[in-house]
Image 1: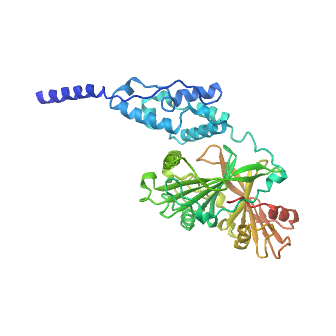
Image 2: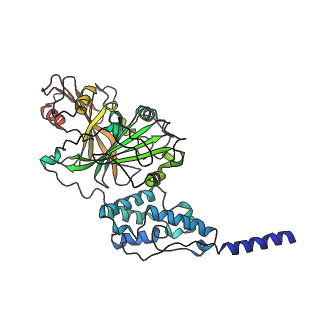
Image 3: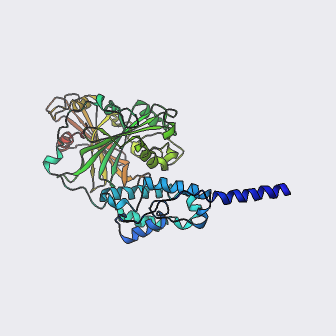
Length: 444
């Protein structure tokens, strides 16, 4: 018993001495807090300020070492990623972007941290509070500003040698052949008024088609291409200026320190590597951490593959009948648009002949003989992985334009309604002109 008592006494003394090993947690007066209505700020202050602010808000049990060390580490790390008391110094768009990310973290259950909630139940975000944040953000409340006729025609970009684009600051090489990859999905981002095409190399496309994405196989490469949205004179929202391309490269061993993926982003038509140094990758891994159960990939591939888990692949959008004269989802994409009035999204695909003409970047807007264009229109639904985004749902129509001779309109067929049956006696003249007039989305 004396030995046990001595051990206990030594433990108490050691614990008391450890209380003196207490590195500080810097605090400062907030001068540039996030700009938001008082109701929104109250929610953020209650649920987020303990970690994501320059204030020091510790419960009594947080003050006890070694718990204090863990709390301090989490606070300093959280401030680096997002600090609400310093966010007001950034542009309003950046503030909204940070708040969108926070809402997504909350609705996916990643924030506040579950272990933090267990000890600090008052920090739990209630459904009513989450609804208040979403209502304030209102991603679909403000459509893109109308663009003039000249703005709808994207300027011809300066020639960029994709083979000479420098690697990312973390060493990830640029994928110069990404334009040849096939589309896996498409996203309409109302939170920042952009469109995204998600492309995959052959390994990724085959994995998506088979549902073998939990995890994605080594060698899979994903590209996410973003454009600004522009509201055209036709009341449709089209892709405008090229914004960036991002890559995720799957290699479980090589990139084991970054969740099994290599990450990179190149911005602007000159494809400048993103970030100030290699530590930019922390933004990528931190943002994708809530979907680690989906191998850190937000995208739901359009695929007919069956999966026992919900919201892993997008089966609804893949529902094109095999009776169609062509299967355009296996083709490359040319452009897209959204119709806000009908809440639909349409993607223009092309066969190899049409795609070669598009990638030649010729000033001629005509498609050569043998070109086949397919415009697939889907209803839209909310993206379950990202608040503020919409993805394709059930297909509404598939239209085909086949070019028999250069300069001619060609033939037109339309498949529509719930079963995508062919419509008889369709006058497709105007639709052929419209489909062929859609400008390819700008690429570097």
